[in-house]
View: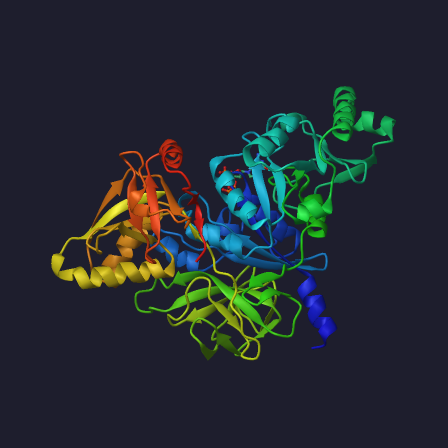
Length: 532
Ligand code: G4P
């Protein structure tokens, strides 16, 4: 393959995550993207919602059988000359640290917001992770076919709640039964939608230039027309103007209005988004920034999926390729293991099924068979060009429980099991400062992980446990500013713990006591993420 072909392959890739609060419409929007990409024929296939066809992971089936779902799947499809990788960030009950880690593998994010609700708690959490990485965030304001909040108010909500300026790229004309279409601000055209059959892409859209007032009045009706004219004047006079550099730096969020369910505004969103979002980004490593367009293959592990089948203890390590080209069976250098290895059974999620991949490029995600050697954040590269990517941060858990084994004779298996599960990154374990592992405190991002832990300890390690939930909701790493953790004084309900790497942390019942503790201890700095 020539250098030019390699560059083309890499530069046509767009790898992004879709983030939202449950029920905002992430699945529906993903489905419509796949529909436009020709990857599925019928909407409703994703997650086997309306039809029996399953567009996503068969691992999910296994998880479903067990009543838990832990997978973030990756969907790949082509559209308009681009090769698109969508990273699904699990929401609902399966919200976990994996949801955050998946964002480490994305180059940008689409944030779906329910226009009747505005910014919701999960949107806020996921946005924070995107903001930490300064990746571009594009907003799709969804469900305009239902009565929505005032669009100006929705923009204010994003700016106030998330602290990012917005730039509306299109503007809705009415909402609910009165939803007529959107005004494309760059093109200065109004796109009027006729009825679109649910789940198909055959809907009729008519473009009318804003300057053609007669045609617009006819299409929209007098009152919608004058409201639009008023809005356009306000928009042009106020608000941030589009600036690609600010978008690239994650400092401005372009906003699109539409309705994923009825297809209104979905395809123009996709088209604009693909033009504005980034090609695979260079990544930080210990030798500096690594250019994705390179002859040297490299990738990092962002997620490890334990095999749910008891008979097979193997795991799948999900890797984001950051530079070069991957070919099946290639020899790679595993930095953390300090040895050469062959990546066996690489798999990639296509829209409809799991494939064995022959080749993949920077920007793509592959899942490789892991006999238990990989950890989250590990780097694989070529033996000729060795380096390690920056680690993946540990995210603050939000739910805590004290865990003990029921049978004291099984102490060894218990510690082994819980430590291994923590190493896979499914849970985090802590102990009280100055004690041994007698009392283990488990922290998780999503409560379902407690059940996963219990199930796995019972089934894989034959250990029954007792779990007592603790009232803590916040955990903070203590930044090393010379303060002695032992001397920190806080509220009476604060607890001092250490993590697996002996780093000191504080547990708090509410955010008020975080503030109190910061006030009482001069020079104390607390962090919500911890770099590994
Ligand atoms: P999620 O992945 O973000 O959790 O949301 P999902 O797409 O599953 O959508 C949640 C619900 O909102 C679904 O309804 C879906 O049909 C509906 N929805 C999504 N986009 C739109 C939209 O643009 N307009 C309207 N009116 N509804 C929308 P459901 O009744 O929970 O599920 P279903 O039975 O329709 O599948």
